[in-house]
Image 1 (cartoon, helix red, strand yellow):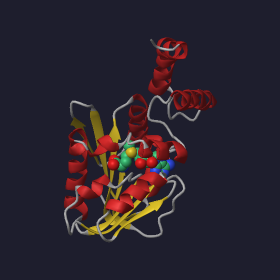
Image 2: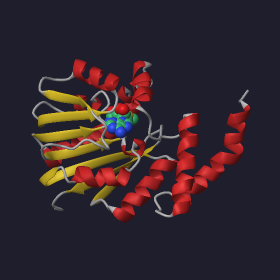
Image 3: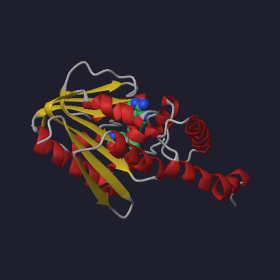
Length: 232
Ligand SMILES: C[S@@+](CC[C@H](N)C(=O)[O-])C[C@H]1O[C@@H](n2cnc3c(N)ncnc32)[C@H](O)[C@@H]1O
């Protein structure tokens, strides 16, 4: 049986939160900011939705194997598409993988497809796993992507299923775009949920991609956006 708070959430608050995401998310008004704080606090308390979490929460989830499914067949299409873009647009180049988790993307890249790989992630546990299984030369670093300042430029920047965990996703996307070499490519992959759809709408208005694609599988829908530092 569902607990009372869960019932209240589903019947009353969830529809209200959905209204927030549909009509207010991303607006800079005072009302929108107040609503945003309430929605975020509720989602963080209830563990619902893809919302910002603490390093300790991420570590606990990785330690408990909650993200092991990322290596399963259902996830393969988006890694394959991202790997394809990297092959076509930044072959043999330097790659920054933001919110890299345990670096599963690397398993989908061929030998010689990168000359430098730097993965950053908030979770120490994910980064430890990444380091343990990484091919030689791949670098992993624990860092908060909303504060990390890249010290170099990259041929490709990947934000694969991490943007909606940031407090300021559009600002983060803009900032990582600045870390591209001329002719470089930034790839964003975003699983379709109510928060992420609001983020995609915001991105389309404030920082439109040069190209966008959709992947559908039995598990859900992903939107993949492509930003080229010098549009081709
Ligand atoms: C759904 S996982 C995706 C992992 C990886 N990109 C992949 O697709 O295999 C989301 C990742 O974002 C990371 N993350 C969340 N907030 C972050 C932040 N502020 N800075 C860096 N990483 C963050 C989490 O620790 C987690 O590893």
